[in-house]
Image 1 (cartoon, rainbow, N blue to C red):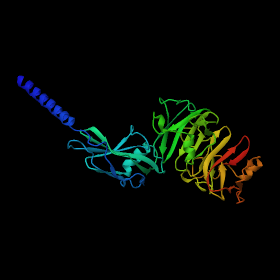
Image 2: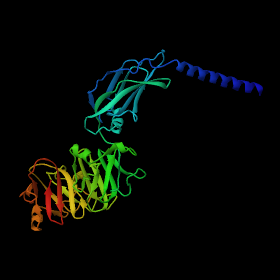
Image 3: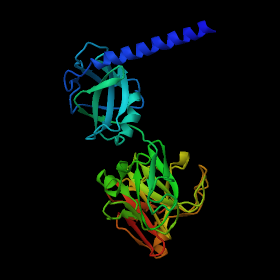
Image 4: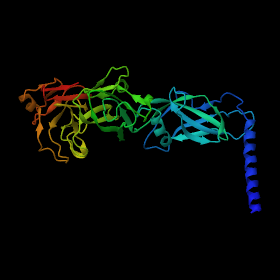
Length: 377
């Protein structure tokens, strides 16, 4: 028993001496220079990331050695942070003992989005190299700004008094789910303010009304700039449950009154025709939903093609054969006393569809069944 105790004591003693020796060695090591330099790339260069080329190099960095007072094995870490930040929320992308590192498109895309990259838009992000010895004595390189065009999107969040289930806090934020670059959430909306956020609990990650407007987004008219100091969104429609959709492919933000959690929404009309993105087809959900955005108001941001036609359907049966379902052409609305925007005329094509004669682009198409007005903004 005594021998066992002696063995344990000996091991503990050696372990303690080894630890003390490491600490003693580190005590003689200190940075010999305040920083070191990234050689390549240089500030202003950039990359376009692709979902079909995830293994392609996105950024290859080389740098000068970090200088310490005593020769030591140095570990280098490539760090990424939002442009202009202090790297307090830096993300580590790669670690090596070499003085070069390559980060692939697949490795960079999600961190870039997390750091604030706007999908499909060249976004400046900051990179630096962190040097350490035995995980301690950090020394940092200069910072370079590299332009990254990311793809896809991350799930986001929304909080604010306009979303009663969330409020202005982080205990129960509304979640926007990302699918194919389209963010959606189903929430109750009232006539108050809210904001979108890219990161949970991080107020600085907020995206307000001007953020999207300045990027050229077409925003449904029941969502306005609150002009409240923070320029939040304000919902002005009839309080109810809605699906909110941010489509990063078409740069549109819409809402739709929601009475079902799955399946076809009975509160909506539907647009089909060559003037719309889905052409004359119900196949694969190509039709454009014209949702109820407030009592008796139906509105959607939609890309219209000049000099092409379309028609409004009341019913979508969720099949590819809706042609016999109730629909409304141009004369139907005229005969029911509607005032119709001058950019919409009778196509006189045998079915008397609508013909869009305005410029090709994303427009706000609205049917107000109370005032009996059809407009294109």
